[in-house]
Image (cartoon, rainbow, N blue to C red):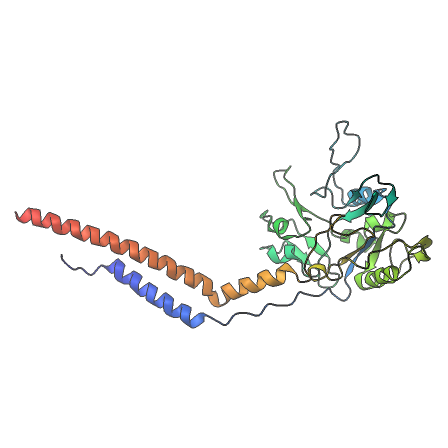
Length: 339
């Protein structure tokens, strides 16, 4: 069989050799996992106290009005806004835990309890980390996680990344966008704050700096159940709207203090958080882990070069087999011609 120098084969061999050399030269030691980003010092948020909530859903209506969101109908009469979950048109919702006879509020057995569902404004949000075009942004001062529809490409990575299932996409329009709570940041310039906290009649939803809200939450869970204390309403540091109320049988747990690296929305409850619909999350954010993996793989272009080397090897092998078959056929045809 005639041996021939094929230019394509030589080119692929050179590329493979050079790719392997560059890969070996650029492989760096593993990147250490970064810590979860902390909350900004002046982070703003909410404290939701389920023991004070009466389920009136004034917060749901106020949120709809403040954000100009459409009603959602899930009953035949279509007379009432009846969303079943948060959506691109419903940023805030009160859900209910039920058990047995439902005789006692905030009791896990034969009782019921409420829980507010909305964006938690994570200290280290996965939606921001996952967004490839910075449509999701965390304000470095307030910590509010906001959404820019002009930058969004509709990939919905933020929807998949959020452990709380909060960002939702508008599938009912041709030019859909993401909908989520932004703590009514568009109302701050007018001296207003989150509409849900402004209208809450019992102070179950309280607005303020997260550091102040955390201190208030810890004050409450340290009180004896059945004792009387003063509950602020509306906004910590705002006009005094406080009132006296009876202390509930709180769980000794402020949800959001540590979960997922910490959140700016904190919650108190007398019923186990898992039963009222809050996910059981680690203290470390997923963003810190995923970004570490990405930086380890893509740092110095290691992964792309390795992938290129693998593809080059496959192409080289296939071209080599193809050329050998062509050479064999040519040699066979040449032998027939000689006869």
